[in-house]
Image (cartoon, rainbow, N blue to C red; front, side):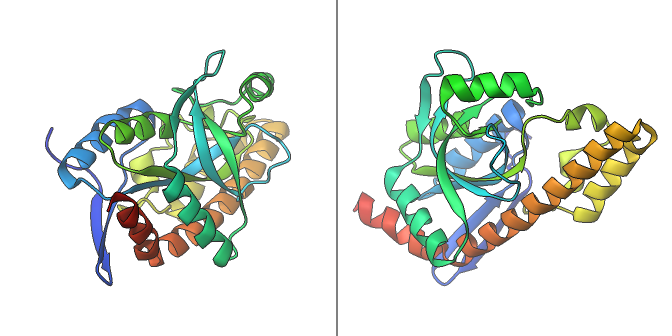
Length: 245
């Protein structure tokens, strides 16, 4: 098992080979990602996923191109930086594809953040606009092996709802995602319903309804961004190749 790459699929576009890895959430995914780097030795890595917004004015579904990853604890030092050439190539492609996006720093945490007060303190102290659970560690691992790394995150919430408390048992990532990492929307809805949130007071039900709407917007934005990036990945890969040459 230690040598396997879970949830790995491959595809080819023109002369470019693309491997899609659904590694998992948080620190439990580090081992799978590390094995993928060692076995595949990719020319470049793009991490695509969702993130919580540390700024309430950023709507769900908005794409974010990460510049730096910062530590969750003060003084929030930079722990990793996205490859500049790769990031610029992705930015140019998104602009051409008319995908709305903005650049921002991210904070990588080990546990989901859902406290508005802690969110606001983290935003004020770090200057970051999003919070996520994998990118900082993965970017550092890629840099150590000399592999260009960048991340595109789509906002799914505003780090103010204890969603995972409701779905602690029912919300299983492997169950709600396809092998290529795309969401199974019907299963996400079923996970929300089976969590029992609808039996709680109206305030909780309202929060779950809003959360579902935000996740729907996130899935839509994630799908559009991923489709554009996959289809035009050879152009991005050529920039990385030129840099190495």
